[in-house]
Image (cartoon, rainbow, N blue to C red; front, top):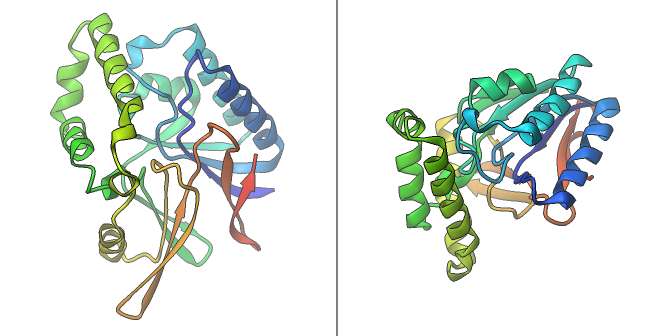
Length: 239
């Protein structure tokens, strides 16, 4: 059995059947292979609030809860697309909502978990969006708007995000100095995040200290899960 699996950036949407099928395949694999699952943001492609739960999203929640009934622990961290996922969906899905950042212990190592967009500081437009939406007042004000209006706004944001072709890869990637500074602050040498859709392991060294950053994949083509086994450590597995 795999002790822990980390995934992110599924961008589930009712009109994207291919990703839905990959998710279904993942659930069947996880049901017999995994003890704990961490989802580090952007589980849904967009989310206007828990009062927008419909038959499709309720079905997703029930699929997750079926893992919970089998004793698999589920943890979720908000991303930049689904930061309005709340307690109602969490109760239906059976997952625990994590604050960002969160530090967990895996064997001898402390691991820092984030969604990842906080490090993309060269993307000034996104950082303004993040500053606004991560304010504690924003969800209260936004969720007070009529659902239809919220859904229209969310769809506009989603459309604009798909028009990001004008941004350079450098703008949309993390800034190494921000990563190292954050890891030093939390006294860790290992970091796991999503958001950038550039899966891999990146190594840093600063003041003779070595750091390791694990980047999770998106699910558009060939998704990967980052797995942890108490004898193998951390490794990527194709799903």
